[in-house]
Image 1 (cartoon, one colour):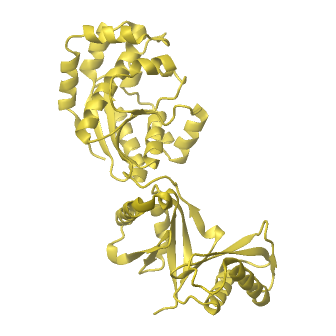
Image 2 (cartoon, one colour):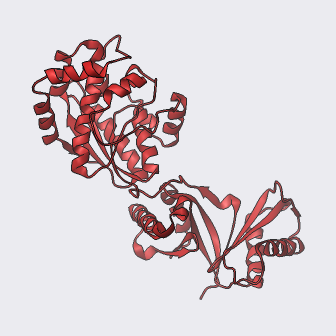
Image 3 (cartoon, one colour):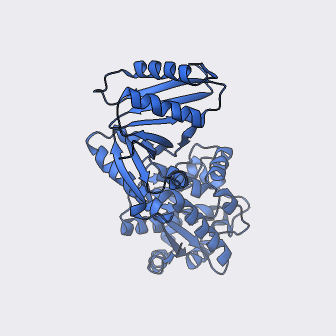
Length: 397
């Protein structure tokens, strides 16, 4: 057997705290990694995954594939970092000396300051973590000119992990992951997805907490164009880069919207529209086996998102309404949208139904009793809702 191989070390965070359920979460994460690698063109024969103590390791048949796989793994929720490492098949100090020296010569251009950081998970190894670090540090100083120890702010940090096997890598070789929990591990939710900036970010944040998503989009042809629908499909496609499988359901909202506009005072139309969307999303959620609704509301950002307005929108569903952006500043939301690459799609100039028939002066302090009274006065609203749900379109992504 070859004594040294190149591997990817996959580190996870919160999963380690799951106690007896930890193996379930690990399996979900492994499934997500396999799915992403297959989606990137790898076949199962191209790689081998194994469990380490608090880690996963992936070996590729072609070492050149190791770095190519990194971006397809770091986008998976639940992973805190990915690093390319040297794997030793011998757990002894002599092998660690030789591999460490070779690694530093290859990856650290002297002169440089350095330190060695060791984590000894294998307590059967005869040296402690600090003793290994001191020993390897002294060995490198002796055999590689131009190195100087700096334990507080080194230019190069050599990391050694002694587990079932020994792994050697540098801090610079680590790529940060997204953290959170594996896709779908917290159950399912229905995301009310518009073409704006906020709702895709809300979906991203909810998915990072392990919520599997079904997205629902409300469109009003001919008042909204196919380009607006394509924009939302592109947002859903981009979100699926992080969430894995994502279904997008399009609800034809035209008849409902026109009826509400006809029967509702202008200043109350926005609240009425959003309440009706939540009612429809609730029914879809029950059909999908989802346990929550997710919206992009941010408190006080617009008139329909004051606390009074949010209260008036409540009561339409027994399911919890998750608002991941509730206390976010708009600048913070935009920053995340830029980071996850939904922002360039969201700013395309194609409106969705949420921007139609907007009043000049929307009500900011609606009374729930009055809103409910208006709803009861629209005798065919329930029928229109049932028809819209029956005609839901599954959008291909």
